[in-house]
Amino acid sequence: MEIIQSIESMQRRSCSLKRSGKRIGMVPTMGYFHEGHLSLMRLARSKADIVVVSNFVNPTQFAPTEDLDKYPRNFERDCHKAETIPVDIMFAPRNEDMYPEDFRTYVEVGEWGKKLCGLSRPAHFRGVTTIVLKLFNIVQPDIAVFGWKDAQQFLILCRMVKDMNLPIEMIGGDIVREPDGLAMSSRNKYLTPEERKDAVILSRSLKEAREMIERGAMEADVLKERIRKMVNGAQYGRLDYVEIVSRETLEPLSRVQKGESLIALAAYFGEARLIDNIRY
Ligand code: PAF
Image (tube, rainbow, N blue to C red; front, side, top):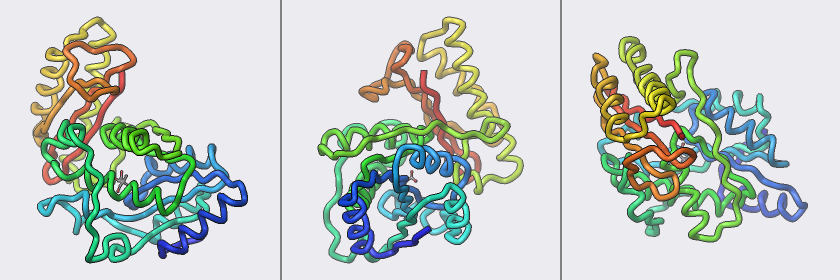
């Protein structure tokens, strides 16, 4: 696997790959790989000639009060894991190259960035769209793979690709879960053993909501109340939000619409803010 740090070298490499007719599949990441990341890389591998993974902890998507400094990092271990896929190129730019002192331009996401996770992380999605557009311009992928775990992020980025006419096929990879159901996340590392045990309530509450829907309970308020009770009933759980929205518009739904709905939640367990969702 080739490791590229310089923006210019990555751009030159992508240009020459494209000139020789190769299809580039990209997986943007912030590193600290777990099986969720690896499944996205495998998906990219199955659809492209060349797989590029970016590994960059993006400061503009963290608020000053958030966990940028302690966000877990292990570049060497990431390289070993990526090699098993195999990934062709790991692009790991330096912060000072991505955001030089005179950096000024951001991608605004509008209303969608203020909903769901945007309520408690108001500048987060502007940071995500800005870095992803920069990465797309550097790597020039034909295909980009993101996880449905970050459903709002994926939908906002699909919107950006459409609105900005980027010639990129967006692919969403399914959530990968631990054996007990907890969605894999780099932030699970922050959980104490007690909080880790409790955090399984997130996927359990979503599973329970799915079962309720399958038994005919389509009212969003009823489903949200059940999830709220289950998560807040856990000793260490504090629900941030639960919403049932349209995957097309991100507007709240009063009733679950089959094939169109996203049930998304975020909750705190100690220091960790975890998210999870199901599509129905
Ligand atoms: O999902 C992530 O890891 C990040 O938000 C992303 C898309 C790599 C942008 O920094």
